Image (cartoon, rainbow, N blue to C red; front, side, top):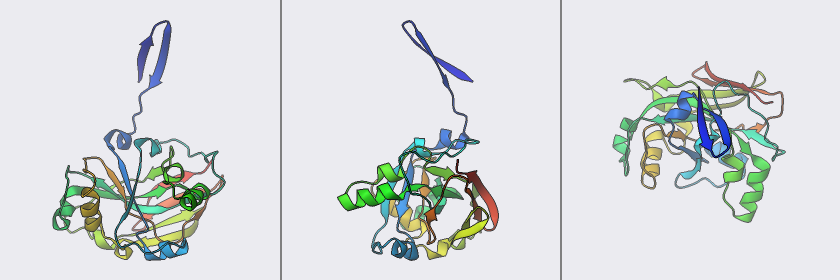
Length: 228
C-alpha cells in the first residue's frame, strides 16, 4: 500500500510500513550496565541506580529487512537483552505494582558502534551516535507473560554463526524488572507499546559482515538475522 504526497509540480510515493512492532512502539528505553560481569568486562563501575538511555522508533529493524553493517563504524558489537513490552500507561509506578504494566517478553539485540561509544565516553558526550542509529534495535518474537510465568528466572542466549557467545538469566540482573519500571517511570511516562531493553550479560563482542546472529529464550529461537 502506498500513500501519495502532493506538492506543486511534484509527486512523491512513500511506502507505508506494515511492521506491527513498529506500529505499536512508542519509544525504546534501554538499560546499561545491569549485569555485573558485563560492567566489569568493559571496565565500568557497578551502578547504584539504573543507567537509562533511549533509542528512537527508527532504530527498530523492519520485519524481513536485512541488517546492513553501518558505514560509520569499524567496530560493531552485539548485545543480547531481555526486552519487555509495556501494556499500560503509567507514571511514578510503585515497584510492587510494576508487574501490572508489562505483558510480554522477548530477546532483542542492542547493536552498538563500540568505537564511537568509546570516543563519546572519553569526551563526556552522549551515546546516541553509537547506540541509537537506524536499525540498531532487533526485536525477537514476543512471549506473553501469563499467571505463573517464571519471569524472574528466564534464561536467554545469543549464538554467532552457530557458536554460543552470550548466556544470561533474569536472575543475574542488578536491577530486576519491577525495579526498572519503577525507576524509569519516575523520569518518563510509560506508554502502551513502549519497549524496555533490560541490559546485557557478559560476552558482548564484535560482529562482521557474514555473521549470523540468533537469539534464544528458554532454548527457543526467537530472533535470527544476518549481518550484510
